[in-house]
Length: 131
Picture 1 (cartoon, rainbow, N blue to C red):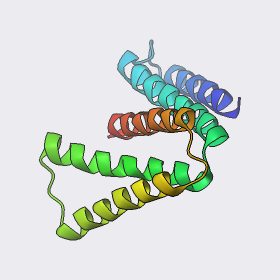
Picture 2: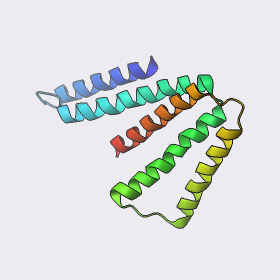
Picture 3: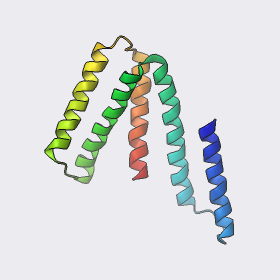
Picture 4: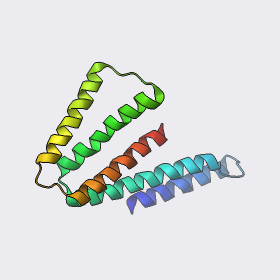
């Protein structure tokens, strides 16, 4: 509810600022971007709540941070961004620790893992839409 009210306040402030600045209409491109990012953020919070219902905090955290590795790979493949060897080693250790933790934890649950995977995909989309 808090995030929904924050999004509503943000849209209202944007609307008031457009009136004060003498703009006759709200720029639809900015409004679409703001809406897409806000909805994605709201869905990230919701999926995080559901994943924590089934998974331990450590498992959810490790799975969520593995999304950073996916972002690293996507930036490398799509934008040809280069990284140092130490970054790739850190990413490899992160993936390995995620696999070990998820494989050895007692709170592993298929439904929770699916919620967390959806949360990770939303996080990746959120980060790329902000860039």
